Amino acid sequence: MKTASVLCVMKRVCLLMVLVKWVSANSEGDALFALKKSLIDPDHVLESWDPNLVNPCTYFHITCNADNHVTRIDLGNTNLSGHLVPDLGKLEHLQYLELYKNNIQGVIPRELGNLKSLISLDLYNNNISGTIPAELGKLKSLVFLRLNNNQLTGRIPRDLTKASSLKVVDVSSNNLCGTIPTSGVFEHIPLENFENNPRLEGPELLGLATYDTNC
Image (cartoon, rainbow, N blue to C red):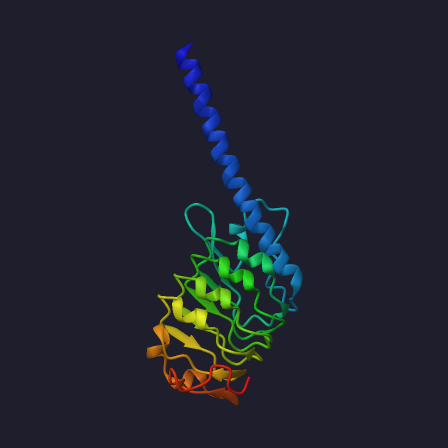
């Protein structure tokens, strides 16, 4: 009887683990399908993104880890247009979001600040507008932040100086304003990574330059 009880418990635990993995994969698949619906895809690069498939790891341009969690989206230079979606913030294991050299419009969702595993955010060479979300400063694993050649406006959020892993920041060729941060990780970012922002001034001299200058 004891053996039967132990086997019953083990089966329940295994079933629970399977259900947890299924729910997680399904949630990630929903997030990716929401992105697909928001994009215009003339070359059909997202054709394999079928919402009826339980596991999104079978999608082209998607990489997963050993636990079948989405870790990478590779859609750079794929002739996509449309806009990003807040649902991307649900991909909590995502490390690389590569959407550079497309014609994506709209704003950067502040929900991307939930991507605690994100290492690289590459949105350069698009037509993205709006401001840089301050929530990106919460990304402690972020190393590469490339937003250059877009239509971004507003200030460079000081919250980004708290992203301790940042090594590369490029916001050149936008329409940013205010002053260039010099504290934290920005101490070592070359000035050329801020060029071609007509209303951006700096680098700021703490105590001497007004943060709101020209904004």
